[in-house]
Amino acid sequence: DIVMTQTPLSSPVTLGQPASISCRSSQSLVHSDGNTYLSWLQQRPGQPPRLLIYKNSNRFSGVPDRFSGSGAGTDFTLKISRVEAEDVGVYYCMQATQFPYTFGQGTKLEIK
Amino acid sequence: EVQLVESGGGLVQPGGSLRLSCAASGFTLSNHWMTWVRQAPGKGLEWVANIKEDGSEKYYVDSVKGRFTISRDNAKNSLYLQMNSLRDEDTAVYYCARGRQTVYWGQGTMVTVSS
Image (cartoon, rainbow over all chains, first blue to last red):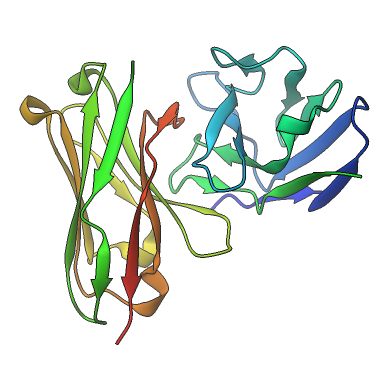
């Protein structure tokens, strides 16, 4: 199984400042079709998860452009250019390249 | 508007069974893979199972293989998860999601396995 490791597990951030979350996979996430099926999801308190980024760097419909995804192979990053209060929650990376699909442990983003 | 509504959760004793349903609307179910994901209380997300558009391919996490069965009825716009031989560690909120990349999520249904 592909293990997804996120760092940090907790990230206190000042409003208006940038934030960055790293996700590392134990194997390359490049699929045989050439795509990299790495997604980022946000889970606000008491809410179901919500897709932010799919296929490594594609922002989903309605997601603010302050969110961006990047990376390749086994190393990926979610960046928030300027953190807003509504960004508080837990962020997960997920790989859908190889079954069983797997999630990172989650990174809790909180405001300082 | 895409909507996914899970139902069928509840309290069940260890060894018991439950069938979860996910009612889909706002899109054509037969055009999409579907996914079940669960989240134990206070824990992270765990992928449970996937099913192809026509039901011809199904995949499961090892911990539920042989106990859970994912199925779908495209004519009824519904996804299902039959859960047998339930264990304490199956206690979680169960979410259905559209697509292999979980593009849209439902609100979830709580399953509690306890004596």
